[in-house]
Image (tube, rainbow, N blue to C red; front, side, top):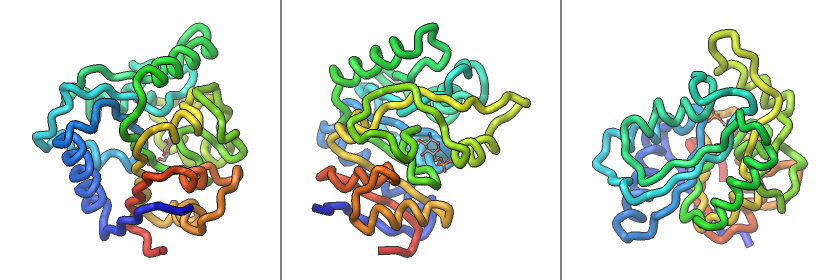
Length: 234
Ligand code: GLP
């Protein structure tokens, strides 16, 4: 059954305000202990709102969705750097977790992360979406049962994401990512999608048909999903 709650907003700023309200409410009701975080341009206005607010995350543990393979945390192209820059340097959390894309043994790193997730079930997972419907780095065709793993990126994702790569560093074609099942295990999912480039993915989701070719559609099997978008679709 499609139980998606659709919140239409006029702008990314209004969308970020909605996310802030949800997070604030969950914190006030003592229901937010473990928070799943995402990266990407969509998340920037959201994290800006948090850092400008009086939200208190000191008792909150975080897990990030994904990280590029071979890109160290010191590189501005890493998701670790993104998180430090936009959020962690400005707000204190109890503990933050992010996959280590330069780990010696990537399979071990994924298993370590998945086991930490199992011990710290996610209360909320923030999600953006790729133009091809990917969530985290779960590309079309990824098994719905997948847990944290090494993923190969599609040409579509490499094209879109390479525009953010700085300093002549080449975008890797592999990443570590929480799996679709690791993500949908979260109690509440908040999907945020702004702009026309996300129309195809959000349309697929709202059409209500689950397909492995559109990883986002797995959200239809979850019973607590909020979609925040500025797109005029229903
Ligand atoms: C990357 C991330 C995804 C994110 C997507 C969208 O591929 N791995 O988690 O949802 O980018 O990014 P943006 O918000 O910049 O459109």
